[in-house]
Length: 157
Image (tube, rainbow, N blue to C red):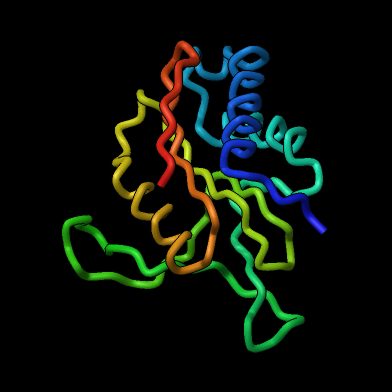
């Protein structure tokens, strides 16, 4: 059984992991390394903070509700091209980081990360985080934006 964390405990543990990333791997942020490299290192530090959970990057499987022993690809109904459009389609999703218990519906936190240097649209990631909560039952979703000095902004969705 996984430990139940209060929202405050979750936030504190994530802050510790982010501080570890800044302390040990600032180089990745300063040199504009690909987001996957940054999320991988952050996931390592998150695993230390949530040892009884699985911390995965780009994990895209979930249990099929109709067949207990089968796993299917995670999909969300998300806007197609224009984020202001009401048109949606089911898209396979690869969250940057999830803190969960594999093979269960115990989904503690889903995290999307962006670098401030990135030209990619943050709104899409925020829409994706909202959908993870509404459509897949994640308890908490977090958007983190880093700059190349290690400063970060968090937004709980």
